[in-house]
Length: 151
Image 1: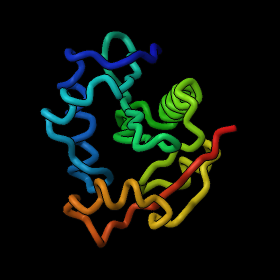
Image 2: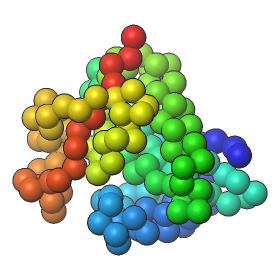
Image 3: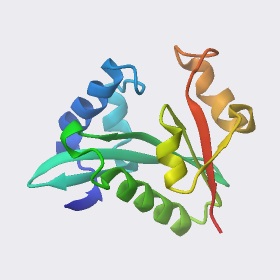
């Protein structure tokens, strides 16, 4: 297992992983153009030359970043890959001196196991008024907001 920053050549595999869960209504779809434009935010888990997990860390403000697009291939679920990516993003946030990291998720229990706590989405105005207002799910989003304070 290798965790590394994503490359342009990974975009198709990343798109397939995200699209799989988006089709099931478990995460938002991402256009290929969005993946190409944001490739520097993404990290992947590679096993035997294949991308089997993906996620990104997106900085929203001087004190806040979001873990986005976290997806693990079905055959690799419950093998610690999602948690390893979250830990990678938390370390990256520490290196950037960001004090808080959050996620919007349909699986808050996973993030709770990683040390996050539930909060109201209204506590994230930078996210809601910059990005959520443009989402097709707004204002009826069923995702839960979770946050972790880094010290």
